[in-house]
Length: 190
Image (cartoon, rainbow, N blue to C red; front, side, top):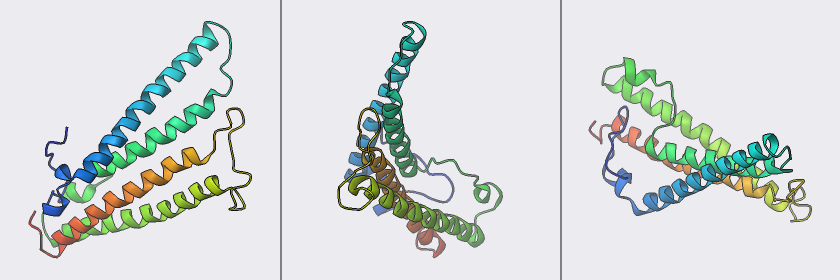
């Protein structure tokens, strides 16, 4: 599962950044993959059950949306962290498509990663505030913790997925920024 895959653009796996052999990354990505698989399976089962109840039995599964939202948050943000690890996020990367190898291309790739890291760190901060609000409540005291209406699921369980996903996306984007910085200053060969 973790065989070496060439990276897109000018980013290559170098020494310390050879994430395919890193125990921490393997553990994290395996965990996130399991969470994504479980969330996908549960979402599929819930949607099938709702469909059967609604159209065959003519009943209703009251409050199922709360579980769907929770599992969807975990699926999306753990998948986003996996995408950051694998460098497979969707991007309109015209720099790699139209520019030849050289300092200009290296600089623009570095700039792209710098902007990506900046934006991701900003959203990570907001994700932390979002999670802390759900965990500690509106007053920050642990009183009146927001919960869902039907199943009384604390909101922080979904907010944690947002925060964790953004933390790991930031981590892997910073990795790519450091690699592109090494390429830009000429310490890493392409």
